[in-house]
Length: 60
Ligand SMILES: [Cu+2]
Image (cartoon, rainbow, N blue to C red; front, side, top):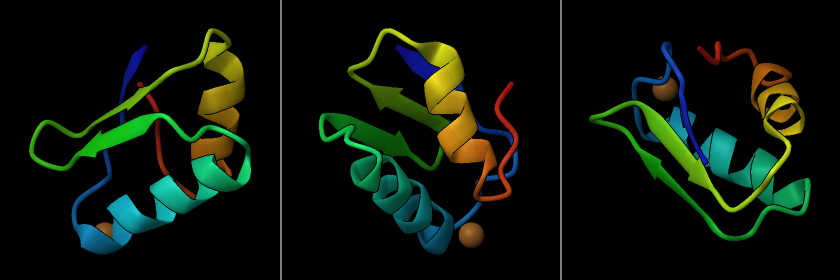
């Protein structure tokens, strides 16, 4: 699935989200800073959203 993360703006944001998702067990993921999207191989969107929002980012 692909999620839009509105307030992700720099390499630090990218690294923070990548690490948070990896720590939560999602290892097949891709963060695109220009498009502000997070692609992750998962089926539970709410679970992924919770991980990202816990770091202070807003998932649309
Ligand atoms: Cu940043």
